[in-house]
Length: 162
Image (cartoon, rainbow, N blue to C red):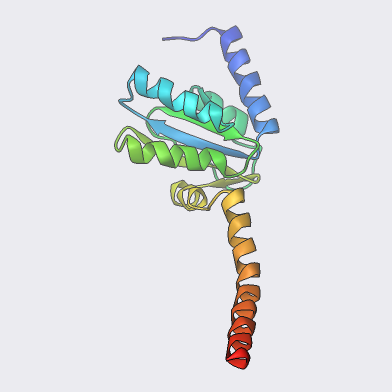
């Protein structure tokens, strides 16, 4: 179905604002997703601070094509964009739903910190733990030697008192 020129301009302006305001953009390949599944996915993404927008591939190529480094990944099938100011959240949420809806949703590539990434690179980025988990891991690493020292000193104190 043909889109009017005014509607195309609205979509292009929305894609331009997504391009400016987002740290990470994930191209989502979706096929055979029901309206109910899409609604559930959109709500979960909204709660995670991730936007989801469906547009024509030609308009996406026009908006994103020359703006970033590298080569734009091949966009086959029906494509949407998931975007956020959080650099990892879009890829993580799409990966989560790709596991849930096996053949219906997949990562097709994306843009991470101003560089085009292919499907495999975006999937790797999606495997990075969230910032809170990384901070917890860091605190645990710092705390581990201190814990070992305390256990050692406690053992020495028990040995001397016995």
